[in-house]
Length: 288
Image (cartoon, rainbow, N blue to C red; front, side, top):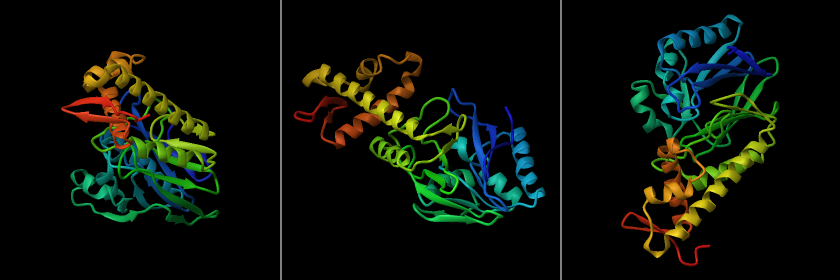
């Protein structure tokens, strides 16, 4: 693993070991900009990795570059495990979406979110070739999820919207399958040249991957509907639907698949295509 690693003009990556979901083992942090730099994803909670991360960040300063802030894509532990520590060590503020504030409180403690980023605003970073990053609020995986788009370079920092390794979990306790699919469609339409995920390698020509993610979820949704159809009017529990809707998935992955199944069912319920009663799910009459 090469770190740090230059990705594109005004974009450098540093992969740090984090307590993330397998098959991923690391979370990518990114330095965006020229003379002024925005650091994205203060991820690692591990002491040895924090030392390496800080050496990377301080090395930017030794090049005459100024770190203006640390931004988080969303509040999950494998993305913000070092947020409070790095902000204090570097003496820089933390930026995040407003929805992150209550979710980050346990992690950040007395470190406030200095700038609450909103959809469509532009972060401008000075340099020989100034960088303009458009902020995209992309909920679905998490309510506070943000992406950052350098439109001039076609570089999209996409957090956990997609991955270069593994897939993305939509946990029904805070995720929204319908919103996630809508935001994937939005990202696909941006025409980005490269996407920089939190986990895995850079993704060239990412539109195809965004659309494959959507197609995969649509395929899974159809299998959920077929499982509901097979259950009939009696209905079936999540645990009974799981081996039918995910028959092509190894049982070892079923605990996470169960969460995705519930997210799909909630979406279908809101659309009037499934209904729930007494913890049993049924296909809604006339629901398509």
